[in-house]
Image (cartoon, rainbow, N blue to C red; front, side, top):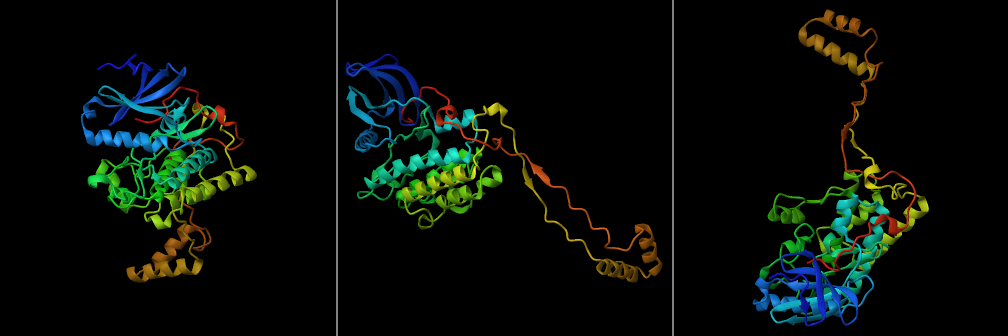
Length: 381
């Protein structure tokens, strides 16, 4: 059924589709009563007859509607028009973080820390109200032209006091960003969201996922078994302090991560402050992506220590003894023109591995110039 320009309950006039996912489609709409633009999430028709999905859909609306925070997308209404079940949400101008990364490339670490600290603030508020998001990913992080960040789609959040495991053994979340305990259908806590935020920040500053994998099973196993490469190895602009924040958030064991989203947010804010004071932020935040030059990652082989004169001479004499020819040693010495060990062996040339494009060093620009202005829906489908 075509839903363009459909009027829901004689109030919400759909204007155009904004996106879709496995559970719902999102449309831009106009609220005729209040005269404002809103985002409408509509359950797929194929699921409208499934009471289990309808229950999950209603739970999403109820959980999200109870959250009132400047960094969380607001839910205005929930209802149905016949077989069409919908949620009315705040419409956010801007891009989701995934689109922003695709358009502009990796974020400077200080900018990524700013985004991460705002997300952490939203998560802390939700956790204090007994809700875990369970699906933190760039697609669910909206960034406005002014730099304001809002977390969307608490569609699979659960009340911590009621349930601590996934329903029916099904893992909920997006496999590229799920914590090890999610991949193993284990208990999900506030620290599960901390892990996913760590993965998001990893991707934000490098342009790569820590565990790409060939399929969902391989990716899930990597989250459980493998240690991620430090972001600074993939992108030389990432300082060690940022490495430490991301890798701590992505610790395999929840007890080794930040104790809360609030603690992680404080660490990100401190990183921002230190980057500002020391002037380590990039000077190229104002430059468009095309002007950013790739910076190679230089990997050096271990340097050889030059052998001393005595060591080299012993080696030559030993070789001569084995061959039974002392004159051979004299011949070798005559070819070098000097005593062994005087001329050190040259250091091997470094291997240069191309890395992702990185900004140059320098100043900072207001957030509004970093984020391209474009209308986007408030929540991921």
